[in-house]
Image 1 (cartoon, rainbow, N blue to C red):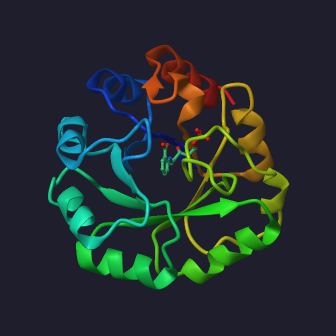
Image 2 (image 1 turned 180 degrees about the horizontal axis):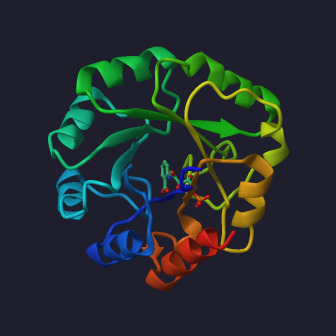
Length: 214
Ligand SMILES: O=C(O)c1ccccc1NCC(=O)[C@H](O)[C@H](O)COP(=O)(O)O
């Protein structure tokens, strides 16, 4: 059986990047969205991602970004995937993948079963689907808010691509999440923070240890 993948998202310091790699994270996420407390510019992303061993994936998280913004990120040469976390259509996702030559993830905001069913439209257009909790209308952020959705909604659904589970995961609930959903990749952000945007080395270490003990 292949090892469960762990993405630690919203990293913004070299110290926490290093701790995530040492803890065994397989994917690191860097958020490029100015309204986020985790926002990093493309040049910061380069500085954070460039020293990371290439066996660890470096994922840029963007929200309805335009091509100029994506080009700045792709040109860093340090990013190995783009996570589209806005309202990007399947056509837009496919166009991004074709234009930038990087694997593309699409975050699917979930509240109801029909949200999960919408993921089928991305089959063939993206390299991974990330099921995340839908944040309330008017919320400042479309992710990273520590909200979870009802994992039972994933039960019996044929997911048409590699996928991951996100939203409100924590040391306390991650083993239940893995058991209930069978997710091959889990993604966490605020659950390993001391405050919004402030990642905790100790919490990153403890989370990865907890996952390996599930
Ligand atoms: O984390 C952010 O600030 C963010 C901002 C805008 C778009 C996406 C964002 N995060 C995306 C992620 O992949 C998070 O890890 C995911 O939403 C889970 O967050 P959390 O519930 O805090 O673990």
